[in-house]
Length: 515
Ligand code: HXC
Image (cartoon, rainbow, N blue to C red; front, side, top):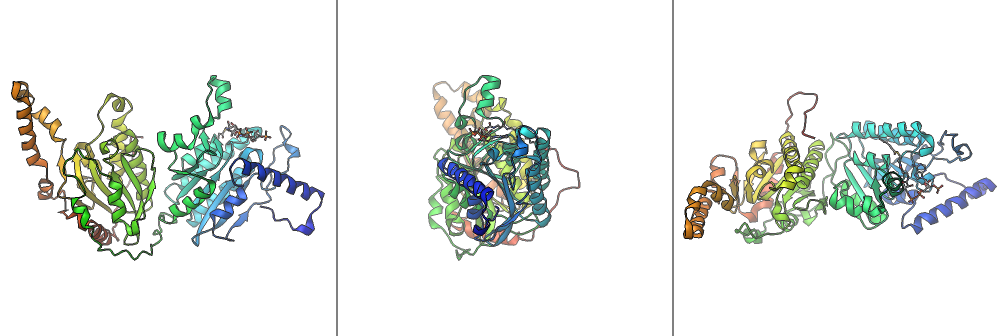
């Protein structure tokens, strides 16, 4: 942002001002804010300090020598959000489509280095066509330098990307390496190559929305975590997300200021979870009832809705929450849910956020599609992530915990710290019907006209064995069977006693997660 004083205006600056005005109007007509407007709306008022405002590109090919652009199409600098330091960059789509040149990439790398060294989050407001095509290897190399820093900064400082326009090539890959991606409905897109190039290369006709609109990425691919209605909502969303996160992997997250009593009981919860495992219920109601002031920021809201993930606070401490959602696909774990859960657990673990898990799942989803899609390797990632987590972990088994999903969803065997269960919990290798069909297949084969009766009787017997959490509690796999109304006090107390937890992994270069 070059500050031009009115008394300095000469014909050249007046021409630049006029061009900027037209460019800003074009952004507004497209339903987008300008890069300058985005920066001011994101940060605390008056806190922005711009760096490298006078940097220009060095390209002389393809007529570029005549184009002198102060700042070279990206705004970089630092400022505050809720008085906490953050570093940011914002592409200016009105300058060569927000494309990233060698020098523009250097500006971004400079603030990324500062953010990593000073332990503050990096926010990228992306709105551009990737590496600047006129520069060839120079811009390509520049983008590769950015993705290297995305990787080096991963797990050190939170990295948040907003996709606020058409983002191709590096402007899609670099955000994909960051922790969270916001997209704006209608105006933002993410793809490796845009529709024109796809048409030229593959002769395929596809719209920007079909290829990489916010709907595609927040529901199908899961590449993006949040969908905002407007630029303004997107920027407000980033501020909200940051309120739950520490500035770096060594800091604590900001403490909340809620007066919500830690010992608050919710008597209605005693009858809320239906004992009949076939009846679904909305686990989000349980989460909202338990967390401080009912404030829950859901992550990946429209992707793999059978597993809920999000941030909240208990007793003013930030936590990550995972919960099986029986009202969507019965809360099964499938490939998408495994990927969603893995990524979330790893983020929480990297940044010291305790994990609270609510379990009610019939298990991994059986079927050819899932097996062919690699459910084994994707499901294994989720096991790996929970096993590797060293942050405080608290698990509450609400109802079904069958098979591999019992193990993966924060079980004691994966070294969860506190494991609790409702009286309605059922912990077994599989559901009663499937187990009876397997265990008594010979008896059932010869049952003839009595088949239904015999089967029903065996199901009752099996349930008697497994329909309560007592067997698990007798073995110490469940630390306590609790009254549902007392869930919040239990969680707050558990997190309090785990607050100084110190645990580390065996020394190694890095593990080999089944990627
Ligand atoms: C130079 C670019 C550009 C680019 C867009 N422009 N992308 N200039 N380099 N990468 C320019 C356009 O020429 C145009 O200039 C202006 O920006 C606006 O672009 P439009 O095409 O008119 O806008 P729109 O229709 O909205 O389409 C936007 C787009 C499309 C989808 C981004 O421009 C596009 O497909 N661009 C190419 C994207 C691409 O393939 N990038 C991959 C780079 S490789 P004028 O002067 O006409 O207004 C890469 C790899 C990095 O990034 C690897 C990292 C590891």
